Amino acid sequence: EKGNYRHFMQKEIHEQPIVVAQTLQSYLRPLEQKVALPDMDFSFADVPRITIVACGTSFYAGMVAKYWLERFARVPVELDIASEFRYRAPVLEKGGMALFISQSGETADTLAALRHARSEGQKIAVVVNVPTSSMAREADLLLPTHAGPEIGVASTKAFTCQLAVLAALATKVARDKGVLTEAEEREIVGHLTEAPAAMNAALGQDEAIEAIVPLVAKARDVLYLGRGPDYPMALEGALKLKEISYIHAEGYAAGEMKHGPIALIDENVPVIVIAPSGPLFEKTVSNMHEVQARGGQVLLISDGPGLAEAGDVVARIEMPTVHPLIAPLVYAVPVQLLAYHVAVAKGTDVDQPRNLAKSVTVE
Ligand code: F6R
Image 1 (tube, protein in one colour):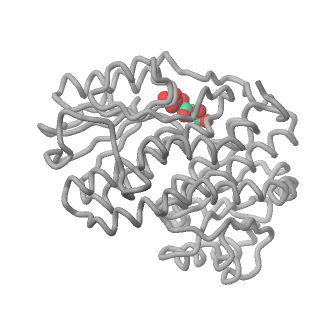
Image 2: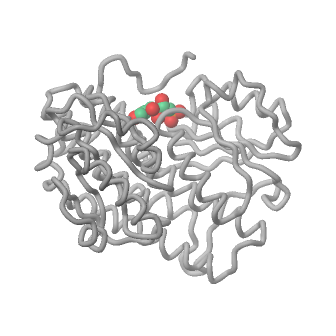
């Protein structure tokens, strides 16, 4: 039931701090400050390579996971969209692990990719929200998200719960590979534990986000820019906006702008820049200035220090200052809220957008 909310999507966006906390609870041991995964019959120490496969929003969770697994666990990661993976004769190393990410656990392309990877001798890990689904049944290592049923067709809470599980997974792989000290693991667990409160603070910006709706709702095209693990948030922001508001939107890696999309910029194109302060901040800000120099209208989503440093923009949304590890979980929230409010302003069917199905069981 929707309770006091107008749409399931709105309810599911607001549930995120709770369901992410629930999900983390089953992967973190707070007293020992360690990550704990379900029992498994193989060790990550022996896994030479991880292949991640998913579709849509779940694929974007996989992009963040690739970043984390490479950075923390130093394991090579291959990442592909399920519909491409199936047909491109991927080379799967002996002893490798393939990781499938899915809310429904029934997406046809992802399930077929899973079966292909199994036939090629890969260990099958699955991050899935529906515990009775086909993918859950076919996993060697089942990593459930505890988001609860997701009714809105556009995925929100399943996505941030996937990120929570994937962060725990990356930490465990790093430990098994011997590249993470106990102190570093404690630190990571500490940051993850802070994620629900930080997401709650992000939700506190709901009204500020509603206030910038007029800048976006009238646009024909919208660009989203981000870097590093926030680049997938740009892709996710654009996907959410196009799915439910039917405004054309594209996400780009901020540094890729000048290789083409900058030609689109004029005063009618809002550019949503996702840039938490941190190691990549200055680079993204310089891309932002390139946009502004061409008359682009920048809407900046950053934290206090970032907003103070960035200079003049058309609109600013302030996130809490968080460790870069949890930034994707936090910055997912404003892009979901923005898409939601723009869609409401446009009067579209938010929970049942045209042409889309919750579970895509055909190729
Ligand atoms: C976007 C969305 C879709 C799904 C995709 C995969 O809001 O919901 O892009 O993420 O269809 O679905 P699952 O995760 O069920 O495999």
